[in-house]
Length: 343
Image: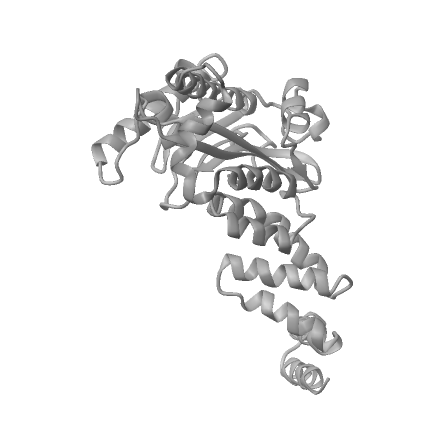
């Protein structure tokens, strides 16, 4: 209480040297956080502070989980819960193959938005064991009976490419920007909301996780992998503003499925060729919706492909950091009057 009184006294003294009621109000605004601290229960603020000062993502999730469980009516309960819901996708991408971290997430947020997807993932990891991931080729072959691994690998690569092209066509066809999500095409709504794992929505965002297994190498040296990406809708009070597909290593995984082999981390030319293959596939997939002859626009790094026509703009953006997501974004065109939004 003394801290709050000092803050208010100082604000009023500062304002006395200025003029205008708005300046007095502005000076007092800085005391709000102090009032929240001194008026909250000591244990409430102490746990909230652990959440705020956490140094990394796992520590912050651990502190958030403790706060939500211990302080169901805490002053900062809404803020902490919103952070957990928004940061869950990044946590899953970072620790998808780490059974301990995934179990930690469920312990911290057992009813979180990704709980169902996590339980399925943990079942897979429990059956195989993290240390036995190299045996996945054998397990997958046994699960599919007589089907050969080469045939299965071919099928998975085709399914990954079809899944990528399918969601690309879905978002490239969207034209109901500024309208409620109920105006989205019926097939999009079905795939987005009804097919598991279902989309998670609030008034500002809808997001759906898509997981596609595939084989990265050719012939007898199959390397079984998984591509995880999100289909994301940015909303404003429930109205569509922007749609995107994004995932760490998204374009490299698509290229690996196309070329049937992985590219070494130090192979600069190989990486460039892989990205070129994914750009070419993306351009071909967009041709019927956003044709090159009518819609092509200059692409300036990190954008590698751009189309703009019919009131929308589509950009294919390469991650600017090694652990950042590749993205394909579609939004209203800036040249469409009254429809432009921030990219």
